[in-house]
Length: 565
Ligand SMILES: [Fe+2]
Image (cartoon, rainbow, N blue to C red; front, side, top):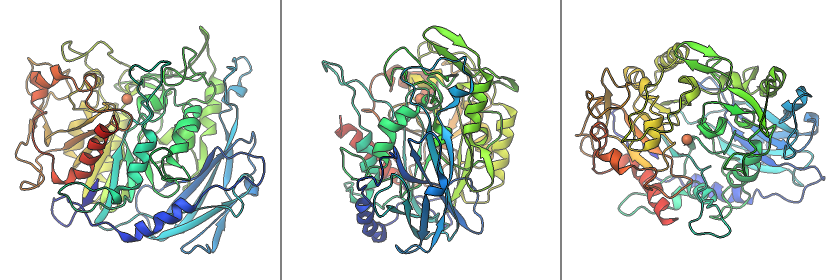
């Protein structure tokens, strides 16, 4: 989504930037030559912002990768970086063992498919100038001869930048009528598309820019957030040496990509997670790896400014909390292992720019600045709403009410929003508060957050979970917005039907957009419920009408979603 603000409240696209186009060739050229040693690097180097949310005097970037070593060898690696391809500065990474928490408790079974330990490396590139291109090279065991080379651009602080939004690419639907059964994997295509927005032509629209960053609405890795799914599906396409519909693109080695944790990224439903991995079927029906769950907190390096004690281990019901969100089950037998949970949590400890911290303690919710926008990523999974998941609810069957958003999260969110003076505030969470899909009826828990966001200056919200694209008119929450939806009840929201993004550009309320179409054909009957669209309560937030002009890139993604069916 291209985004520009200048004083007022108008959003519109900015011109394409030839500078980035010129650099594309360099990224594609950063190909992997044969390894210098037999050691493997399953995750080639990629970049993340790390623990640096709010703007400071200088910027930073993390360069991370994973090897198949059972113990890290940080001194064997060097990351050189600088504003020219001759670099000029260098840093040694830190290293830690991941996917090895089962070894902390020998009473636990080790599933035969367990992936075993890996070594995760993270180098902090500090004292970087904002809005500047840096080149980097990683040398060491398993890296290409001459080093792994790529580049990135640090955060812009002006009011002109562009970003992309996508989500739910971990959903691989079955191919209808395939025998033997096959799954459809669109993920490489969406990565290629996102990496080449400047080459897209939208009929009647101006040129599109290359994105400065991307936002993700969750559910990228099925299920239990297993390392094996990152290894086999996510990393190869998001960090491909070649750029094509079939392979993906060298995206995450050069572009910041901010991800929110969805239900599948931390378990199946977001209620709890089996730390042994499921044993009921193949990947995407319940993973079978074992011992490598919830790799989200090991593979990503986002700001660590979120509150402690609200991660997947804990079930919150209002302000009451239970330590029951991580369990161990294999072949019908259950186990209890505080030692393995502790070992997993400790494996997430890393210095990503602001001192060593366990990432799982802070990264379920986080915020950062980019341009003139303050972005906030919130976890919306059911474990912070009483562990409830109403699988029977749909538009014809009223759902149960959800417990209130815990005070610790509400207060953190309010303080975070109020502490930013940037022009725009954009929030991302996985399960939509408002949409026309049955998944939202079962998971409408974030409606309890709508009023807080509205009262504290949020302009725009991006969600996933529903595998399609939707946009509401600007909404203002009424007092009963958090109650279970009921056609007979009072209006949950007020809507601003005059806003069109073209002639009426100041929305009276918060815009909610669903972008969860990255893994599937959109607008299927399963994910866009016609009964819901016709029900009384959803009519109040879902109106036919034109898309706002600021959303052309999202509209393009949607159209390509149709094309790739
Ligand atoms: Fe989801």
